[in-house]
Length: 187
Ligand code: PNS
Image (cartoon, rainbow, N blue to C red; front, side):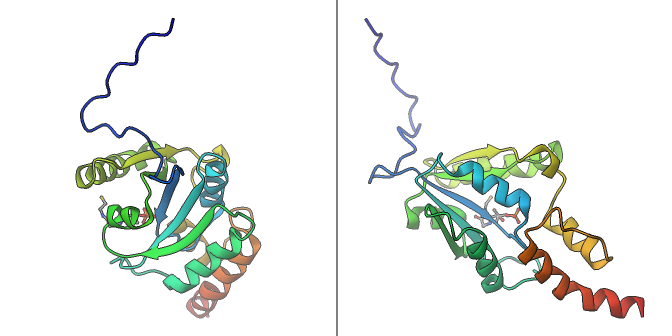
């Protein structure tokens, strides 16, 4: 005979499902621009969640290379075959956006130990702001663990070949955006 389950600790979310019974997750970030590491994570989320919001922060104080509209457009192009993906921008607190869309789960990628401190702080802060929010860390494919948008922009501006780290459409757009600056600097 099966044992009765122990009661959950107070404040522990009873389920990661929304009231409508769907597993809704948010994958937030700057995505400036989206790269194969991001896409690998999105692929891994398919099948784990019924709905995945890829959410682009729009009030970031960091200067971005691509506008929010450009980043949304690129992500939409990359995920157009994925019916469970919804691509949106958000401003303000992530937990407020999650409330608006009925999500309980934040997905974040962990590439290396160096990511851990920041991600750990963010996960705890988000939980403090809303105790129903859980953070799920996912690890990308091993040959993409050192890829970041920041590094890709730097390498591209110095003339490096990034065709193995970016979908071709994004690679072309990145080159178009950064190549003139690189050329004029070298002129
Ligand atoms: O790709 P990034 O730049 O590492 O993403 C960071 C992001 C967008 C996930 C984070 O800055 C964020 O959630 N910003 C929204 C504002 C917020 O809720 N801040 C408190 C979280 S600790």
